[in-house]
Image (cartoon, rainbow, N blue to C red; front, top):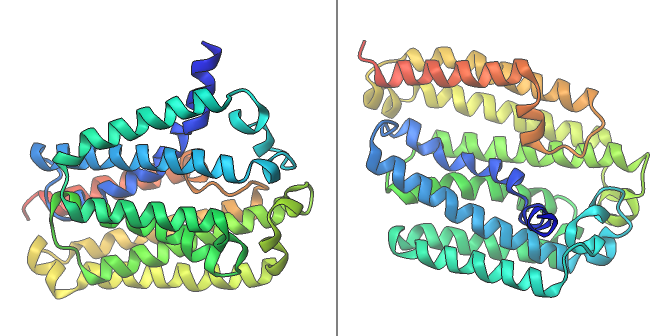
Length: 294
């Protein structure tokens, strides 16, 4: 049982929550209640989960020396010695088999996205994480690729404004993660294990967050009133959901400024009751506006 728990810690299923971004195109393509499209998105979600777990394992191997100096990461199964090379190898093989089983059910554009995601993350682990700004955009690209994977999985078109909104939100979340790490670095050994943090400061990070947050809010608002959006949904009422997007952004910034955490976006989003309620209400109102005739 202890070994099984260690394997689950190794593949980090808690991080799979980030992959819910894959389902965003399902909502805005008006296929939320279409079982065929739901099934394809579930398969796409699972594929991304398995691949991301492989990336996490590769990262643990590549960063094992540095992670042993980290106050939190040194407790990871491989770094701490809970799991050895044999168990790690078996886990990788199982994940690869699961991915291969999914190949026939998803189109090649989806798998191109997966490959790009994997290559970017490996390059990040090898060296790109040491380059200021580049490291942020690699993290942001991960969120963007999740949305694109969802688009390709169900083969739908997506608004240019929604792509821009996703880009800004992705940068916003990536920068907020760096901000959390930077604050934590002042009170722990993490500062020595992530050298790129030395090239950032809170004022600079906050400026980037402001630009990204503004871009996300503006691009989402423009998406809701874009001609293509109004034609597809048959209403301009989606503009009213902008207030929930603004609240979510402001609440997230507040949480970042008042919590000394490594800045795991999903952890902050799902552990704050007002944020959870805001997301649920936004989702419900979007569904009502998009799917229920005037």
